[in-house]
Image (cartoon, rainbow, N blue to C red):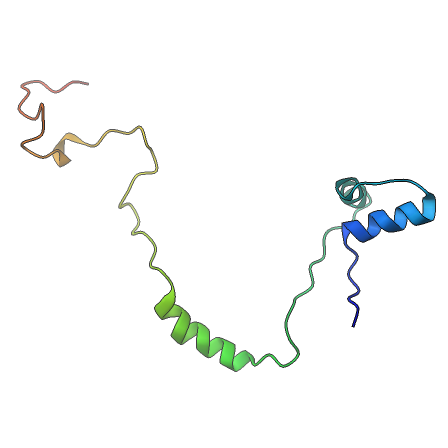
Length: 102
């Protein structure tokens, strides 16, 4: 069974056949956007899909398999931020300095 989805490649081919003008796929995409068309992606699901089985799998199996995320605030996204002096080990170099630098 053939799908009935108008992809940018198919639109570019149609423009070429109908008007004898060559459009790239990205050019056809830009043209469609200018004309007010947005990409439509069909839901690809089998007709025999069992929604109850999918729901049960998500609740039971996926919860066990999914990796836990990082705890909030456990790390910093900044690679240049220095660690605070409170978290520095007491035997670290410079830990016994009398006046901290700013």
